[in-house]
Image 1: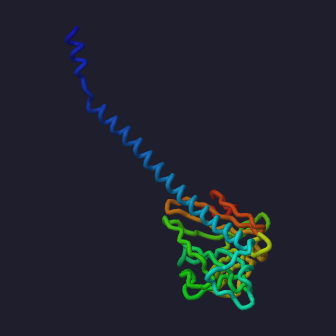
Image 2: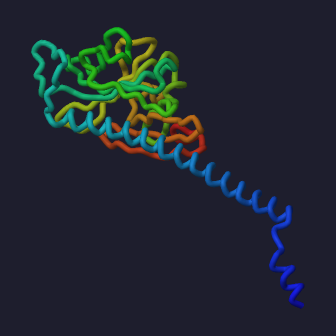
Image 3: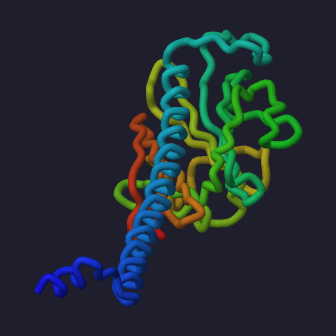
Length: 236
């Protein structure tokens, strides 16, 4: 009896048990690594979307708080405390990962006045150029009219750039769409044949994660998840 007990106490793992244990550890490690990568991707695009929304909110606050423009060439007869502020987006594939925070220094045209490269921030109206980074890009723009969203990149042809501005004393947003090159006379008639009540800026990560920043004409700014249906903006 003692010999049997001694034999059992000396027993080790069989090859099958070792292989099963290694396989289980490998599966657990794979799940952890996959979920960690998914978490990082979600976190990065969330941060990018909220950074953009904060930029839009900053433009709104600057626009209604009589903030003086420092370093910008203010047009003749324009008060440095009464300018509109906004974000400028290029809708082409040349600059899908950048946007401009600007002050409308001449304050007459309500558009971003470029000098040289649209996104080199060489314009006196440019306050800051933001590079989104992490491989996240601006994948599209949608416009809202009533309860209907329209893909602005597909509604007509030649959409080149979009400005979203705020001007005192109202917190309302001003939308300008540039067609067939830039700079050209902007318009806000991309939602069918009507003006847009809101704009959604679509963001996409390299892993296919999507977010959108929405700005309504009433001044509301929000970050939202993106579903897969064709009735909502920025759907996959």
